Image 1 (cartoon, rainbow, N blue to C red):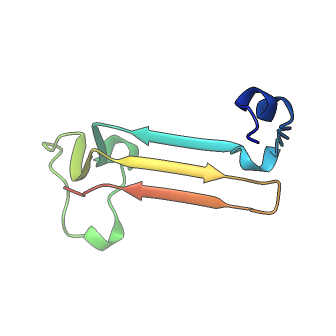
Image 2 (tube, helix red, strand yellow; image 1 turned 180 degrees about the horizontal axis):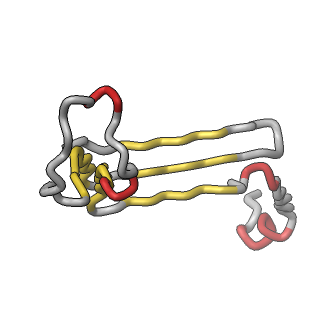
Length: 101
């Protein structure tokens, strides 16, 4: 004799379990279009006395006050950070990917 689906569903018990350590405590993702780092000399910040190593030479003060000497560009940088602190799995991830131009 077969059991009807309604009778089978009536006698079935489903237990549920919630484990908070399965839920991530922190997850961050950041993606930018362009990231640039520009390094400059600010000549007005250096002072008025010339360096001893440049003793015979004197600056002519015709230089621009800011001299850019390096530009680092990173197109489409991606940063991802993940951290779990409680529970059996203690996980810390950090991911950074880009190209330097």
